[in-house]
Length: 422
Image (cartoon, rainbow, N blue to C red; front, side, top):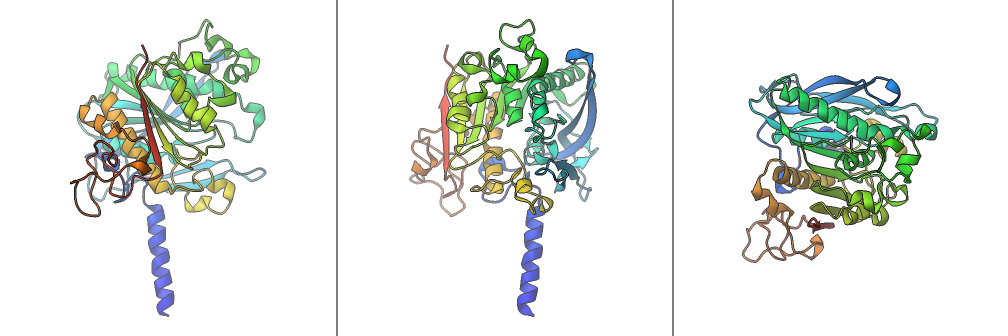
């Protein structure tokens, strides 16, 4: 009987741990991953783009997380959505527990805007590990529902290539305009960032200034040549640009390698400060000829590359909900074969916070979290005379464990930096 009770207790404990919002990092997380000082509010809006190619209207649902005053005991949100399952199965429904409160009163002040773009066939409900976390730190975070076709429907694979940069640019411009006319009182229209995962990374890099190669796959795969006018040298080239954009962060970005969305010429036109994050075993977009190439060829941007050694593609998603753990296809939307999701989320929360706080908010103290003379974390050491105790946080320094990481927890990572060429 004792074994039964112990087994039941462990099962309940594990279930609770799985359900906990990933936006709230664990005790082993790097320093800047921790939630910020604000509660998190959530509201949903729909914007309608009436200037799509061909004249069709495109409704775009947008979820907005913002710094809020949340009363004790307020009911937090449970996100619900679907993702495509392995054909011929129907889409798989899932839920994710959050810490945001719908309709909570916003905190007074004006906060930077972060546009978030999900991956192909994805959904904002799968990226709340980041959206909620950033909102708690004083950002207004707007995640777009791109409403992609099913990722298995190859006949419509060109659609997201057209829609991503159009959607991101339209939503950013619309929200900026609303902030300027007073409709969004808590938004600072002059401080904007874009964060994209996978296909969203392709869109983010394109609006950030990487010009599309007219002979590349992104331009050629869109039916009817509709993308050609937006490519380099076309009459609509440059219309995606967001003048207020201060920084762009991309996770496992699509568009490199054989995809050749921009080519070295297009990536060299990107001047926006850039954070690229990827796993060096990414079999979806490629690493050596994909993620790393984007970092190497964006030569006119001040840029960082964070690498998860032996990590794959699925670094931009929440941990797999219980409903997505009965089929490996469903689970693999979320999970990495090597890295725990709690760890990849916390490390990215830390690094993205440092990057955005520095480049968007102008917080010079954050630069130390992005600075290291030892690019491979395994080669660092605990600083001599550094803080004592097993849970100590590194102050950084020459050859030392990267600033903000707990003792023994900066493992399996690379961090590279390159300054902008003239």
